[in-house]
Image (cartoon, rainbow, N blue to C red; front, side, top):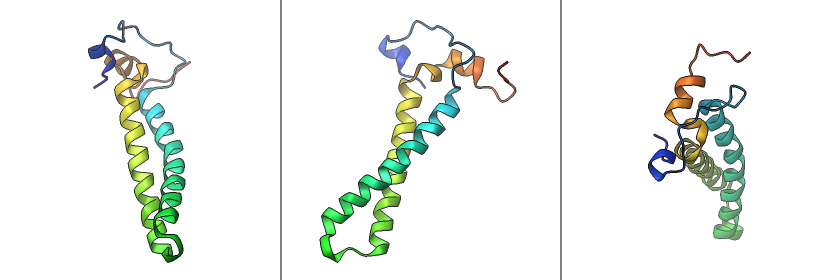
Amino acid sequence: MACRQALGWSEGEVMRPESKPCSRLMRHTAGIFSVGGALAFWVLCRLHYGPRITVPRSLRWASCGVISTSSTSALLVRLFSPECEPQNIAAYDRPEYKPA
């Protein structure tokens, strides 16, 4: 699924064993961006509604921010990260792989 090979950004090299596996990298990136997305969309909600803001509205906007930013960032990591190229997933992202 990685676009790096299609765009010519990859030489097909295998990552070093101490690099993060693709699934963990996607999970960590999505977690970090979910906090930022919640805060950013909460601010947008405050700007949009002004004094008419309610708790359900702000929670709704924050949850939309969490979902949209975390899924978008995980997708971008999956598409453009060298750890998520097929040869690296095959080498290091298997469930039975345990780094030394």
